[in-house]
Length: 563
Image (cartoon, rainbow, N blue to C red; front, side, top):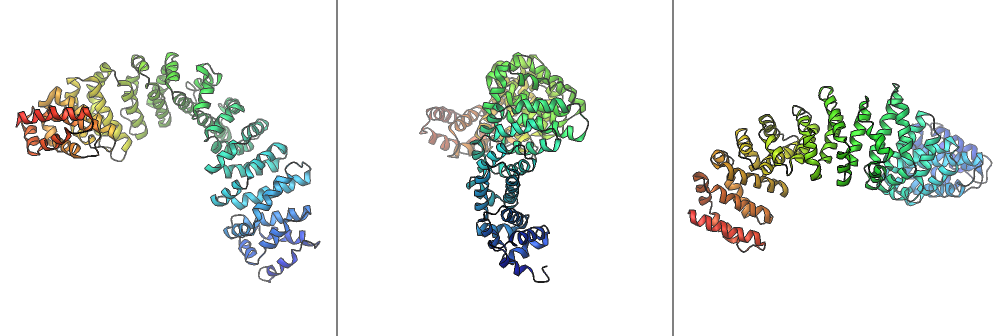
């Protein structure tokens, strides 16, 4: 048809008054099913007359016109642009709105075509999707889903449209103002086929990233649906069962990321959902073990929940799970269980209970892991456990294998998280134990230079932790540390920190404490004298922070006495 020059003749045949018009529009729709015909249709000027036909009151004209425009837009940048310029989307959106209440079958077919046309028009195009959202398409489609939920073709079209639009952040607010949660849950409950459930899941996942919608979905009964899917598929071996189990349990974990939705399901630790999720941890199924551990980590986001969970024996379930995975070595399960333990260890009252339960011993079994995500969580868990726990800090800090591994990880430049956590744990072992034995172990294993480097971190909290630990090293065993202090240029690092106007008051304070502590060493004292510390320190006597100015006076006296 293109070669015969028929295309340029078609615009004139698209006459609203002509009885041939639906047939011409149908021919165009069939042609545009072929990818190579879409651009020629645009170039032949077919879009403006087709868009004009959208103002027709003839059902067949509207149907064939909707098909033609939808097919031309399919995967075609030129087609979409032309429809956009001609204002076609706005007219179609208004049609859908006015037709949405009408449930006769012919009307439903037209609605399906129009929804498909908007979907093809905006698919994978953020700008056009945003345009549809601004036109108010979302509330209209949600109403459509409720009214026509028995029409398979139309509901599928709505679901695909929701899936596209839900990826856009700006859509979430509009979705939240509708009853999308109830409609999707109602639709899900009616489905028996795997494919249909998957389609609904694909809409639920992006929507459930929004905290308001999370709560709406929980209140609409989605969790009960998900638990039912888990129950039906947990022992299934078919691919679709495994896929559904993963999707349902992942979605369950996602719902728990919202504070309100999580607390509603926790119900003071007595909620049936919470109890069901607990039963996943001892399961034989890795996917359920993973989801169970992640769910516990999500429930463990406030002190009250954490304290309740530790008091009701959840720690032992997680330790048993980790023990099963020392040999099996499922990295995602290890990571999730360690995340849960780390969160549970945050409240002070839980630390000693968890240490008594043997958490540190089980966590140390993963010290040989070569997986950075596991290393990161292992370090974070130990750091939380020893916070304010002197005995545990001393026990771990004198564990040569642990300190050796920490020093090794302090050099893991490819994994900033692991490197940062290793440094912080090294410092924490010294700060919380205040033990000479721990200090000796850290010196012997070569940890001092890493703490000096940590003092130059861009994160103030890490700088401070490093300086306090270095101060304790200097106070507890300066003789043994002297060589490492000199070798890592500690004195010049301190000079920079004190000279830098951007250094926080606590950094300046702890740097001066450390300067005073190293003055007992002859080589370090000489370095301090040679760098003219007195000039820097005397300026700090006028510092606005009283603690800093007071410490500056004391430090100046000490430096003057030494010189």
